[in-house]
Image (cartoon, rainbow, N blue to C red; front, top):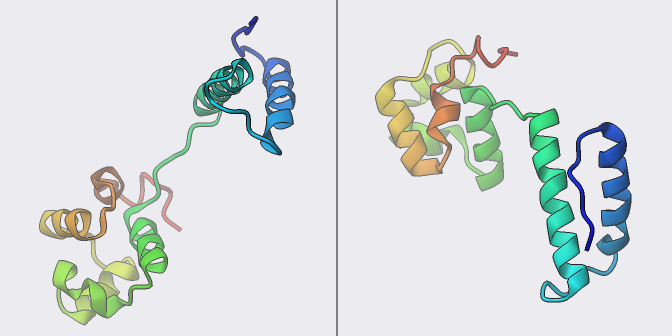
Length: 126
């Protein structure tokens, strides 16, 4: 099984062509084709992570995304942020999160602390 590193955009495109053959019918992991598929996916993911790094969202976008995912309303955040007016101030970017809010949101909603502590200016506030 000859596999080489992905160093260029051409290497990446060739790897993606080879991977795409397996998308319609993924091979069994214990077969030689399955092992090749897994290795090529790992190489492609590593190349993508290096070439196209994903930035963390700003704190408010992370909260809104989690709310949407879980079907939450601003009322549901009161136990983590405070009274409803405080929740709306946070969601409308009128007030920053406190450390206590960050801890509660991280524990209560599972939002990565790295996203919550990031300042909106660092994330390119919208």
